[in-house]
Image 1 (cartoon, rainbow, N blue to C red):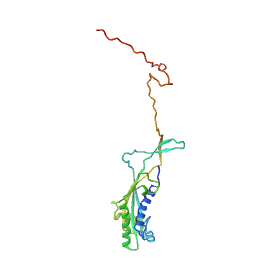
Image 2 (image 1 turned 90 degrees about the horizontal axis):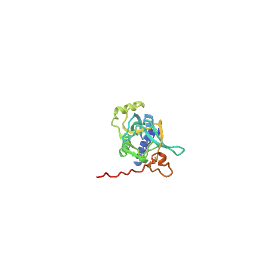
Image 3 (image 1 turned 30 degrees about the horizontal axis):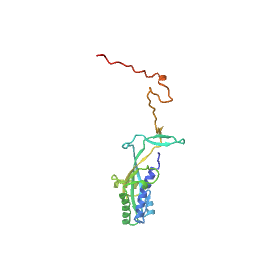
Image 4 (image 1 turned 45 degrees about the vertical axis):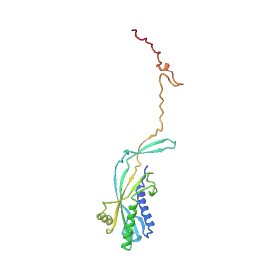
Length: 226
């Protein structure tokens, strides 16, 4: 169950959506997963850059879910066990999307292409998900982050040593599964219970006389005289 590459796989999944859009639109710009420093933007322009700038961890229990998650594993003897793991960590992943080009109009067009990519693919699943961190029926929802403001952008870019520039915030949620095993039990596939009448034991078993429960002959009682 442990899937420690989940942050990497989520980022690569989002990057794949952006690259597919740029390719379909035959854009000269390339999409990157990188810190948008002034040097990186200058060297790679025209480009679209996706940057994970914040992670918000939390603990939560989903509907119809136990506190401890379980997984069936089969050992070398072919026996199946149910393994209980510690609670996974829920993560809110916050991304910044920005663009760079020599011409400001081109920069705006590149940024709009990136926004269109996430607008057209608000929920990713199946083959759209990259890596081994996802289960069969998992889906990844992507939405613009309403909490992302000019102040947020200024704080991020100033931390990278440059002035604020036009950027859009996006967020998605993921799970970091724990590898800490809390216990395991053998899976019982079938339970057989024999039920029989003690007065009529099955063939080959002890007799009713040996059990001391041999039936006594019925006592005949005559009807009362009138």
